[in-house]
Length: 396
Image (tube, rainbow, N blue to C red; front, side, top):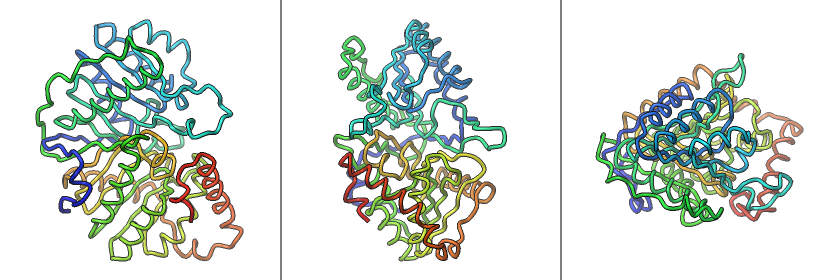
C-alpha cells in the first residue's frame, strides 16, 4: 500500500519504531508489569476501567513499589469507568506516593448531558520515555467466565521516536486534569529525557481524538485508509456503528471491488449498541461485505488492516461515542510484517471463534425481526440528539 496522500502527509509520522503486537491480557500485562518494575524516573498510566481484581492488584502493587523507590507515578483513570475503585485501594496508592486523578469524576449518576459523555476511554502507558503501550486493554482480568475464552483484545508495545508523541499526549492530559482539579503541586512535570532513539523500522504515528483540535482525527484516519484501499479491508471492532461518512467509504470500497471483512461482537455486552449495529447488516451484506460474529467470549478489539500494510490498534471503537465524544488513542502504522501478523491473528479468530452472518438470513428477515434493531438505532440517534452530537452523521 503506497504512502497515503492528502491529510495523512500533514500528520506527524515517525520512522524507526519497534512495535510489538500483544494479544489479550496474557501478553499485555506481563509486558506492562515488566516495564513498571524497571522504571527509574517516571510512569504514566491511563485506563478507562481499573478493577481491584487479581490483575488490578498486581498493577497497583507494581505502581506502589515504583513510587516508593522514588519514581514519579501518575495514574489517570476515568471518573465513570473507574468510579467504583475502592477507597481503601485509593488510600493505599496515595500513601505509597502514587499520584491518582480521575478524569471528570462522576458526581450525579442520573445526569445525561454532553459533559457526562466526554469520557477518557484511552488505554495508554509511558515509562521513562523509553517504552510505551497503546491499545484497548483495560486494567482488569480478561476472563469473564470459565466457559468463555479470554476477552479478545490487542495492544502495541512501543519503542522508538513515536514515544515522544505518547509522552506529550499523556503529559498534556495529566496537566490539564491537574489544572481542572486545582492540583497545582502535581502540575509541573520534567521534560522528556532526550529524544527517543530509533529502535526498529516501522513508520507510525499516534492518532488521538479529543474535543479540541483532534475531534475527527481517528475517524479521518479510517476513512482515508478505506478510500486508499485497493485489495482488502479487515476490521475487528467490538462496537461498530459508523456514521454516514465512514459507512459511505466502506460501501464505495466494496463497489470498486475491495474485499471488506468485518468481525464484530456476537455476544450481548452493551445491548443498545449490539442491536443498533444490526441495522447496518442489510446494506453492508448487500454490498458484498463479509460479516462475522465473535462468539467464543467477549470481544473488545479495535483494530484494522488495509491492503496488508496499513494497520491501526487502539482504544477507539467505530461508534458515535468513541468517534464523537470520548478521548481515544490509536496507533496507525505502515508496516507489512506487523500488518501481516495482525491480519493472521484476526483470521485465526474468524476461523476458530466466530460465525459468519448469512446474507440470505438477513435479507429474508421478517419485519418483527428487524423491529428491535431499528428501535435501538433510533434510540442511539435520540441520545445523540439530546447531547447535540452526531446529528448529521446519524441522520440516516
